[in-house]
Image 1: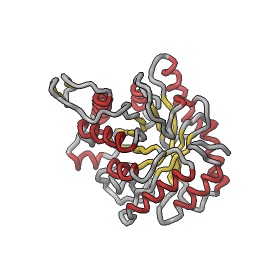
Image 2: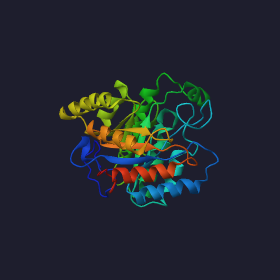
Image 3: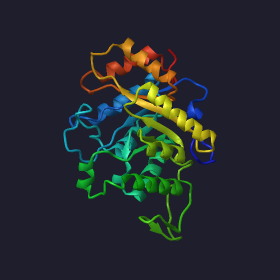
Image 4: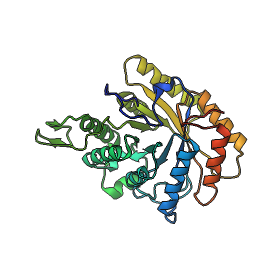
Length: 310
């Protein structure tokens, strides 16, 4: 797993990066359904186990704290009925190999010391299979409801990630970033075997800069393959200049009968041709064909060991 640290990964997971898109085919992931409060937790666990058995690389969950509208089908609805970190801890206990990640956690709505401990604990519980996917958020309503400032959310995200990385490398105090401060008496445990990798979500210049600073993964959203390739090229140039290497990816949706398997597999191939190292797919409602489409795409792409082969 490539991060911006020289510490070597002690255990391998399905997202071992060939960082920046090196050797190996594109990894294919499942974005789990978390849009219905009527969905039993056991259904989510069953889908995670089946995704692993089918050969997908990872399973991911979205995050919304208190949206101003119903959970449901994007873009009208919101994802994240089940709190992501709690649920991934549950899924860690029912899976063995798949990567577990957030796509993406709204970091400026989280207390950073607690986030550092939660993510370190989840890494330990899962055997270093956790990737912390992060974003700055885009819905002002959620920030107002939480009493959090919306305008400085990017700066607070950067501070939180630096603190998490510091604590995950075993460094302690003294520390003061203007928001969190502690002296040399502070003790942080559990320190993960390797720092939890970050996935940076977003298309902005700030998101790309954040990905180049922290390394690991970048996830674009709503881009064409051509737009994605342009941003990936920028990250590759930065890596060539000494920044941390970044594996670039994106996510798509296949949530109904209006698209055929042939069309979706062609889109998967287009993303691989654009240089995506990772592609996450959301298959729609859990009670409206999610599992069937997940199985069909696994067969259509020949996914095995986390990677497409068809």
